[in-house]
Amino acid sequence: MIHATAIIDSSAKIAAGVEVGPYTVIGADVEIGEGSVIGPHVVINGPTRIGKENRIFQFASVGERPQDLKYHGEPTRLEIGDRNTIREGVTLSRGTVGGGGVTTIGNDNLLMAYVHVAHDCHIADRTIFSNNASLAGHVRVGSQVILSGFTLVHQFCSIGDHAFAGMGSAISKDVPPYLMVSGSPAAPHGINREGLKRRGFSAATMQQILAAYRLLYRAGLSFSEAKEQIKAAAADSPEVALFYAALEQTTRGIIR
Image (cartoon, rainbow, N blue to C red; front, side, top):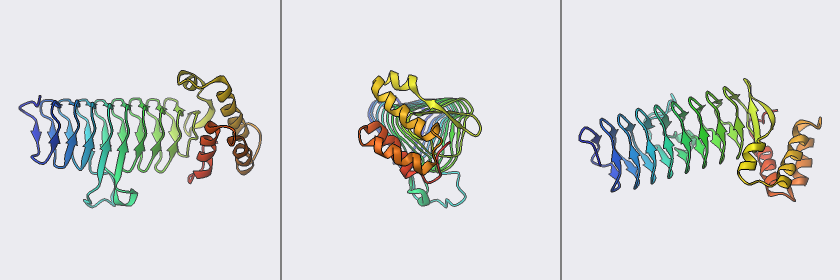
């Protein structure tokens, strides 16, 4: 299952049944879980942990040192979960000491061609990053987020669960859960109705989310005033509570 032209460091731990394609290079302190398929011409450097049943396509660069001038060879790492698809030319960097030391990618994510995930980013589960979407350092992305092609996310931003960014969005502030955003700079354009419907959100729940959105973006309230009213609504809705938590925890400010 390992091509004769692949170069694999003796310290790498490759589970039984893993496929490794021609001319792939796997460095020291790399672990790859069962059922994973590593295509040709892939470079994986460690420390990197890759879970089960991942598919990594040709020319991907996984676990390379971070593109950060403050990095001086410290033992930071990249951790990837299970069942992710990492397409051609994707670049995934390890963390930095100043950012916690680790970049993480959860489960069941699709990273399309030429996606870049910089140091100390944290991606949850079941996201889709379309071609050339790029995260700067220290970005957090929640579950079931979709970033359309050529979306750019500024360092230290957070994107909440179920958010959707349109093609070419330039995101420089936090995106609360459930929002649709687009533009450069990105601006809010309602809630992600279609995505929520596909994921089984009830009409009543979507109305609660929409009401919270309108308080923040359509009621003419200041941020603090809107946040207080959303806090009251959050007591009766876990979905609104998630929306409120994003407002409470933001450090960069939110898209408005």
